[in-house]
Image (tube, rainbow, N blue to C red; front, top):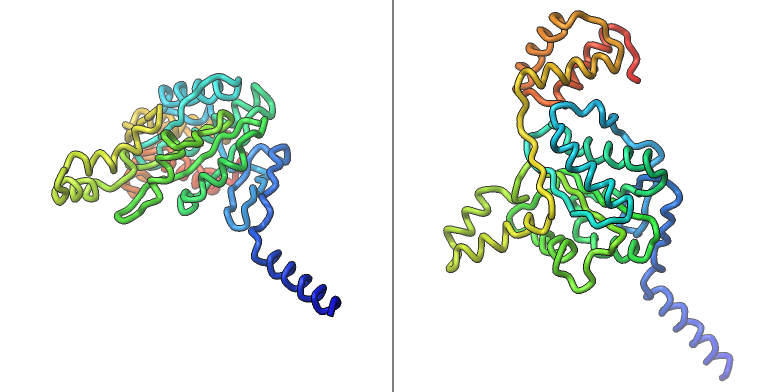
Length: 284
């Protein structure tokens, strides 16, 4: 009889163990300077080499570069800094600037900042990530690229609570940066629909657009003119050692931008990659 009870107790213990939640993820921020957040199972995946360009190659965005670098550097030094949203024209270096600012801070203050990328579809798990980082000594810059929300998307409420207003608050060792093509992170027709159908239109709109207000810094990026576009071309060409005449380089750049329908840092870099490939010049 006793043996039967022992066996039954063992089976119950095994069943309870299977039902128990998995152990908390182990955070080892010393493993790398950059990570990607994976919510299931919860873990930070180290990134051996971050895809980025040097901050000196980001041309035509001097004011944005100065503001973000100053904010990031203050955070790396342990001083107060603001969550930041970089919004505006496509291809003008929003995400590149975040990665470059992180690299620059770690050059000045080695190992001071860990860059953690969270994908847009995982935003609802951001509170869980913050709980894991809370209490860590190393400062962490959480980065979400191309952040936006669509109709019937409730994830923005989780982000609002994390940025400002949640009972736990944002950990002192964490800063949140996001890029978006939309100033208010939501499509204009969604905002206008709320205005036209709600009983209290202003309250409905405020609920949707107040998310942007949770970011202490808004940094706008705008389409560049031809002079700045040529400056980008020249800077990239010098960096790769391309010795074509500026006249030929600019003529080809104009044709390239027309086929792409835009002038931007991304278009300039793609053109220079094309030229370097034709000339047999290896990327540095």
